[in-house]
Length: 122
Image 1 (cartoon, rainbow, N blue to C red):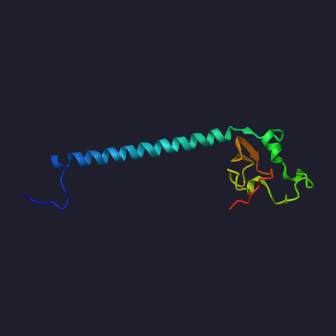
Image 2: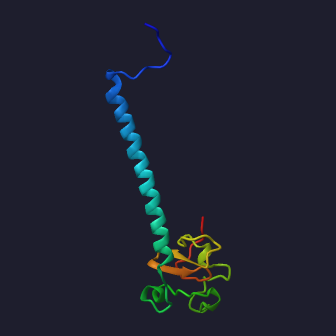
Image 3: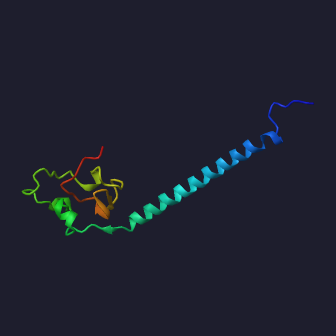
């Protein structure tokens, strides 16, 4: 009998080979499902409501959609360079006009906005 450098598929390896194929199939399904969920969450985030300055949580944190309109007497720690698009809680890219904020669940904030919880993006 001639020997080959590669193992041949025989009845003795049928179970491990099937197991490997099933694991690969499960992995690929998980990757596809994960990608679909990620895409769906981004679409849902884009459709999120705009945070209004009159929202109770926005009022509590002194949120302004236009950072240049922040009351300097009430919020002396505010600096002109501090805007939502440079905040750690802003979930978009710095160039995004609107994006979700982790402080305001289900709402989008203005990239040019500000609130008293502003924390520099790391």
